[in-house]
Structures are given as structure tokens and as C-alpha cells.
Image 1 (cartoon, rainbow, N blue to C red):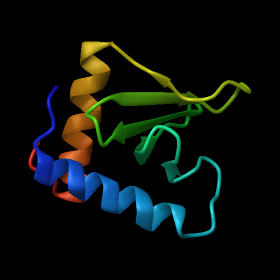
Image 2 (image 1 turned 90 degrees about the vertical axis):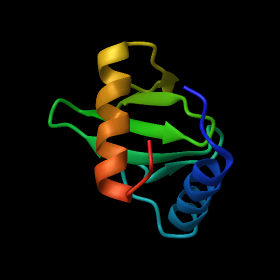
Image 3 (image 1 turned 45 degrees about the vertical axis):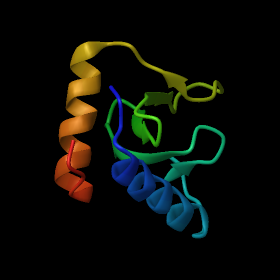
Length: 90
């Protein structure tokens, strides 16, 4: 999904603000992906929204880094929760 410039700027600001804080696990922002944590699950997955509109999934039960997801249902859920949590006009 294409992210409008004003939404991209808001996500970038959220990422910068979270990176300036002490990090916990799961991280509240991903520096390399420029993504902010939207939510995590009891099943040990964390979902992030990137400033470029990509959705990233982090499996907290593995040593792999976050990976972009292409699952449409997951993307819709992350966008809906990001809209609710951060007030982003998505």
C-alpha cells in the first residue's frame, strides 16, 4: 500500500521517538526497517508498520530478524491496529 507523505512522516517520527527510548523486547521500533511496533501476541509474534507501508513480523521465539509479510489478512489487521493505536489515517 502506498503511504501518503504526511503519514510516512508521522511513522518516521514514531520510530525516532521509540528508538530514543531504552529498548525492551520486543523492540518498540526497528531501526533498519524504519518500523514501529503496532502490537505483539501471546504466541510470541510482534508486528510492525514501516514508514514505507510494509508490514514486518518478528518471531520472538527465533533468532531471525523481522521479515516483511505479504499475508493480506495480517496486513489489514496491522493497518487497522495502527490506525487505532496511533491515529494514523490509513
